[in-house]
Image (cartoon, rainbow, N blue to C red; front, side, top):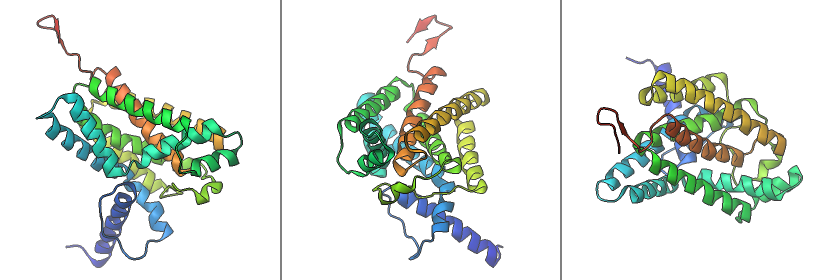
Length: 272
């Protein structure tokens, strides 16, 4: 039997999970009347879990669709499901980053452009490219099912981890896209990484997990360097851009690992 303290801790963790779900998805949840800044920061530990949930939803939609429709249409429907579930939250950040970085010269100019709700040429082109990359990468994979789960989970680990050691750009205080958390504790970072590691070990071999984590670590360093050069830190839009670009890196990495749609039958000497 749990004592009162344990029940309260469990309830607190449930609230943090629901808070993360409510922020990153359109899934309706019931939250307490008051949410504190401390809870907002602590909810970051469950961002990878939210990614896992989104990955499962996309996989389920794909599996149902591909039973009745061609693979290409099933992939598009699964991508549409992701956009509906998240409200295109991360895609919006990706487009805003390219509009701001491409159209602004100073930090103030870049932030002003990123706060603008209108979509510019840079953002539109970047959005088109990343959706096209996502579609063709998923089409090239033999099974998009586990790729949806892996990429949606790990991409949010990469994006959220930037909060840990990068400064939040204060000038972004009036932005239409703010990060849920502006501080990531050691405990939250550990929970985030463990979630990503457990999901990876369930889907990949140990060697592939190690190689993928090295790739993502290096890519994370590139993202941090890019955001620092452009803004001196990160914004909510930057985290969205990090999630989207990391998702593509994961799909491409899986193709490099040999999970493509081309299957080599060594016993028959035939390539299907």
